[in-house]
Amino acid sequence: QAFLIALLDEENQELEDVYLVDRDGRWPGVRYSIKRGICGYVVRTGRNLYIEDLNEQIMRELDTWYFGRTERTVRSVLAVPLRAGERVTGVIAVQAYDPHAYTETDIEVFEQLAANAAIALENARLFAETRRLAITDSLLGVYNRRHFFELAHAEIERARRYHHPLSVIMIDVDEFKRINDTLGHLAGDQVLRAMAARCKAELRTVDVLGRYGGEELVVLLPETDMTGAVEAAERLRAAIASEPIVVDGSAISVTASFGVASWSADQDTRLEDVLDRADRALYEAKRSGRNRVCAL
Image (cartoon, rainbow, N blue to C red; front, side):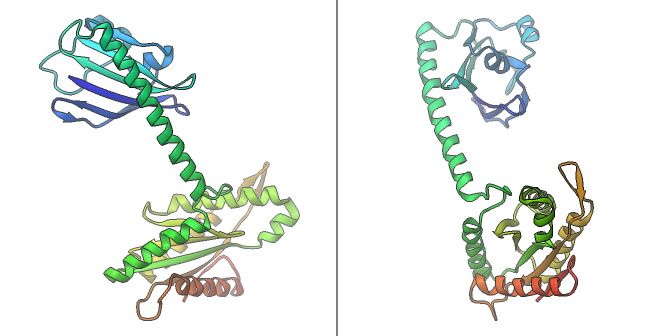
């Protein structure tokens, strides 16, 4: 009367119920330690678990719980590990209100279902990981230039069609060459990673952060006019300059300059037009003394 797929988060040693459904429909998933519950037991042991007649003592021993409707008590539970090679990646489980609900044939069929599901889920994970690597800058963990432009062109078309505001921020680390020359390129890479992380922490989920080239980052701000974009740029500037970046035990004070431009249907026909104005604003910020925001 119920079906569950739980996937393992190896880094945090947690399970997440990604699909949980009974006769009343789908239920919201939860996360929990692999030290708890029936699914946690299956992940830890790597073995099937068939409980023919569930009772309170077994529930206490496994530190498990009911979900869904509770006017009828679950009596039978069958849980099988999902595997990618020798590695357990999750659990697939069913439960019934009657004791001794599953036969040996049922178990064999469910094991085959688990094997097929594990292959499909692992292929989906590998596809998602391959796509993530294809669109992400490997050093900074932000979108690479190609994917940034793909997303930005789509946002420009949306802004044009619906007459919505849109802005761009160009970011460049101040005196980055000096950092590379005095501390080395590995230190420079660490500075760029830290700067990108601080920017990501300050941006909205709808904002698009990408690596434009070298030490330059670019941010696309949907539904944001010039005033909002300048305020966002000031927050980013303050976040980067707020405290030194620690590199190999040394604290490095880092600042960045910002150029801001907003999409205008009257004067912009291409994404490149907005980026060009943001780039010119960035040049003005550099020329005016660095560690500041300029807008055009």
